[in-house]
Length: 415
Image (cartoon, rainbow, N blue to C red; front, side, top):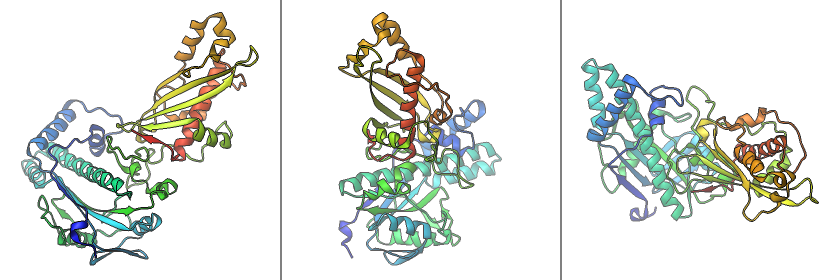
C-alpha cells in the first residue's frame, strides 16, 4: 500500500460554471443547431442566472491506494466492483491505477427546483433541472481535464470514465463506490453527498465516476475507443489527443457518434489516401473543438516543360459532433513557389486565374461526408487553369482529410 501522502487528491469549488449553450439546449431536448428564442430563451437565461448567484458546485477526486483487475471484477482499495465493460477497457489499456471522482451541482439547485414544482411552476422547474444536469456534465469534464493535466506530467494518460448505472455496471454498487471514495480522503467532501439503498445519489444532480490510468500511452493510438478526448468537450484543454465526438445516446447511436465512416468508398485509391494523410496532411485541433487541416499539393504545369508547382490547401472544419462541417477553405501557392507563374492562364491573365483559384470553395457549408457523393469531372491535368482541374484537386484534398479523420490518424497536433 502506498503512503496516502503520495496519492493524487483534488477538491475544488469552481467559482463559475461555464455550461456550453449547445450542451444545455441538447439536454432540453432541442435538435442540434437550434437557437433558443422567446419564452424558452427567457427560461434558459433565468436558470443560468439563478445558478450563477445561488449554485454551489463542487468536485473532488482521489487516487486509489490499491487497484487490481480480475476477470470482470475491479478491486479498488477494500471494495470489489463488477463491470465487464469497464474491466475490459482497463485491461485493454493495461491500466495500472484508478482515480475516484465525485461531482455535484449542489443541494441548492435541487431545493429550488422542488420549491418551483410545489409552486406549480413546471417550466422553471424543468429548465432548472436540465441546467443542473448540464452542470454535472461540465463538472465531470472539468475533473477529467484536471486529471489529464496531472497525468501528462507523470507520463501517464487518463482513460474514459465510467459510473454505476452505465452499461454493464449495476447502479446498486453506487453506495460501495461512495464509501470507497469517502473512506480514505484526507479531507471531507466540499459539499454534502449521500446515497440511498437504491443507488440514487442525493443531491440527484451529482455523479460518481472511476477514471483509469495507464502508462502505456501508445495504446491510445491503436485502441481508438480508449481515447478519452473523443468523449470530452473541454475546449481549452492543452492535452487533447483527438477531436471531440459526442457519445451515442442511450437509446442508440446518434448520427454524430461516428460522423465519418471508416469503410467509405472513395474515388482515390486507399493506399494513396493513407500515404497522403501521413505525408501531406497536418491536422490542428482548435480550442473550440473545430479542426484546421492543411494539405500540400505538389504537381507540375501542363506546358512550359512541366514546371513543378506547390499549393497549400487550408480547410477549417467544425466539430465532429456536427459532422465536420466545412466552414472555410483556401487554396494558395505555397511559400516560395514560382511554378504557378508558368501556367498558361497565368501568363495570359494572372489576376483572373488567381482570383478563380481563391474563389473556389466546393462543398462550403456542407458536412465533410458530402465529398463522397460529389460528382466531379475526372481530369489528369496538373495545372489550375481549368475549373474541372481545380475541382479535381479539391476532391483529392477533401477525400484525404475524410480518410484521415475517419481512421483517427495519430499524428494530429493539438493547440
